Image (tube, rainbow, N blue to C red; front, side):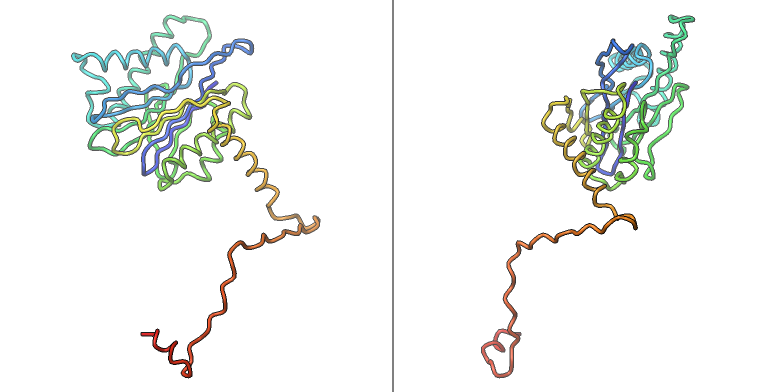
Length: 276
């Protein structure tokens, strides 16, 4: 299985994906599900993939081939608008599924795949699209500024509660990591390492790219901090009527007490001279 998430906020885009591909319980492999296409100063795209591995690899290979062919009539570099790129990627996906299906014949294996495409073309704002197996697509919206593919249910609550268009790019990235962490905790078919990429609006290049292992200090700290503070938040929720009231001690203030202020009086000309 797979879990990938793309987030669109005012400051740009965040992409995160796991890397586990399981053929069976005793055959666990790691494959990159995040694919980038950078043309600095002109355009930049990131594609997240979920579904049949042969289909996604063929789709990415065809996109790379077309982009490198100056004579190609359609490619990632030949469109002026991001939605046109999404339509083109959808066409390539459909053609790749058909080819893999012909080769697989009657094996009974699904050849379908779903993609998330995000990026920016010079002169436009960044955008985020989900591309379905039929080749059609939908865009992220201010009401739902994220798109998920794969095993999405475990990582959805944090996204719903926190993400807004005005969320900072780094906070959106932290939400993405917590969303992946929650999914990995609850589903063995989603696993480490995690790929994370940030695209800041206007950069027209990938701003930051990370691969996080389970023992990467940043990921370990986020994992432990989230677990600890989530447990503390549950303990701090309002008590039921039948429970004894929990006494909460107020922490002592570390701010030194201010001396009492002496109000000026008519009998103190020195105080009166300081007031204008």
